[in-house]
Length: 484
Length: 143
Image (cartoon, rainbow over all chains, first blue to last red; front, side):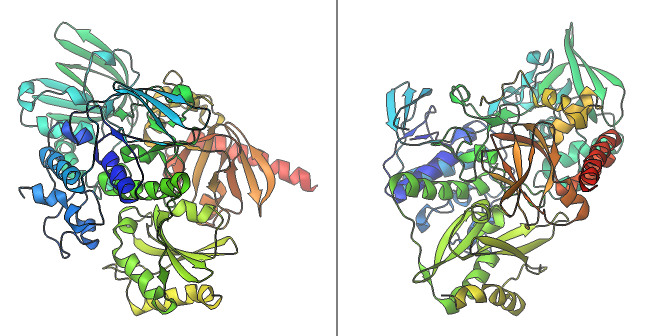
């Protein structure tokens, strides 16, 4: 069973279909798209799709330039997002993204039961599940929840229940001449602030955590942050960005009074405003799963997951889509995965379904032979071009195993699985990022279940097909080849 | 084990931790906003002997075991922290840390640890006192 018809659910359904695994997709919505049927509220995504790139649409290399399309083996299912874009920006609009997902569903022939709401869950004695839905009961061996992280979450602050949540914000012109207090200083708060700049008379954004401009400079979100932040930094009175925890909100005859306590400037600050908006984030709509024992993180908002995106406490319950952020991976240099965006979780879904099909349905993935004299060139090419490694840095890796009949390509898997689980002698490669932003290739060698780690040289143009990289890789994999 | 409900928030849990005992409520909220909580299944590795990458881990709930070459050398519980030695010495961890039960930790990633402590001198002092006690215990063991 797959629950949800957003990009995570659709990618999972496509991968199941491709592997011939019988499944049903349920969706409470009337059509495909998930969150992109409603959000972002001001209609413009932040993730990149470059309609023309050095590689043709439909190639694996092009996926690196298109962070919004779902991925497929068949060329005609690929790169749906750029087809829909009118090129006024190099990021799609919400409507373009929704249309691209609908095109994928149609071309790939995915079948979804729309208007069918998952209502309750029962664990069965045989380890399977029964989902109670508005259309009756479904039995299954394993379930993939692709239910998003877009259910409004309002921080537990006294009086904040009177606020308008991000998802219910009105069109920008409705805030003409109003003073607006926004609780939150992350992406959704700045999306609102940026959109209200031409309309609101004054805006305050407040949360306890200071903004890290050094991090922001490298963030794809900077387009949203820069203008409101710039007004504040220049000392303008129109927009203020405040580091403060919100202690209490009270209704007044004309609006709201917000009492705060500064964090980086530790003293009380009180604000009067006409409008109060909570941009305090979202949660996964887990329904009855926590009662059945599903562990969560982030104040109950995100399921806690294993490296294969299975609940750490409720076996057989898997997640696809944005909730795959519940598996943090190694975070070696502190770098977070891209699992909160389509570009990252489309690959998570592929790896998850490969694992699930093998474990629960006996469908083995292909593991083609890599000729020994081709091994180094194959690894170099993957390091230079594999979109999975480049987008999910330090999170997904490519593995080549030493099997009885030679070296076999084991495909893309979580790096955490490679370093933590026993297996045959093997090499795994990943693209990683150091704390200072340097990107470099990493090689892991497993021999007799002991894993060693080797960093290769960085290159300003990320050319890992150089002779130097070839020599370094040859030295590392040499012992593996000699023992075949 | 039950998933924590919103009635016991991450901030409440941090407030009960020795390392953060001197922080005010707004300061605790800033910590909860800035750093992630991670949960690990029983048996899952958190730190890996000989492999780069660590951070400061503060146990919020559950238990962990310290394993050197596969052999258990210590057990850690709620309020304990680990990973700081690897961060401060800039060496890969010299032991595995694995979850002994469902384990929840607050994670301060390696590149953030120094700033995290410099901005919170009282947390640093608490940490120093705990480390001093650990060292005394080790020296007494040697005597």
